[in-house]
Image (cartoon, rainbow, N blue to C red; front, side):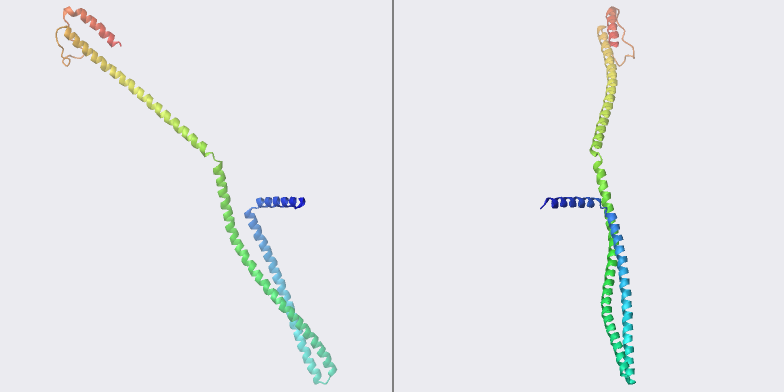
Length: 256
């Protein structure tokens, strides 16, 4: 294969690819229908022309046949009158018209066959056009659906769904952390309140224990349930120093 053939094939292949890429199915289908309608118009004109020609030939044939019959009658009339020369001339005219009628009859038969074929072609083209119009609407609908599907797929492919989902996951983790922090703060606040009450309860236990120790040092027992609130049992005079020291200890404990 020569270089020119190879270059020619490459150019033709590139042109075919460019044309195929540029073809819009909807526009091509519409143009195809327009072309078929134009062909149908031309076919109808051809059929009309053929029928008109057939009619002219048929008229000429009828005229030639009529003339042949007329000259046949004249031949008989001239013979009846005994004019053989005139009968001979009439017979020549009759023969000419007969030959013309025969030629026109052959032409008429041929044109009749042509007209019948053109009519069948016209009917077939009309059927194909009707079918093409129906098929065009279906193909255009399918082409539109395919374009919409392709656009949807392109749009879906261009969406950064993974990034968006990652953002949602990060925000969810952040919210969980905030909730955990809030819960921890609440627990710490509750623990602080609990520790305060525990401190108060511990202080009451110390007071009761000191009261019991004072009662033992004073030689008696103290019924804690019978002691009025804020009241301690009376101390003996000899334990005044001990009581003072215990009061100091109590004050220190209260200040803790």
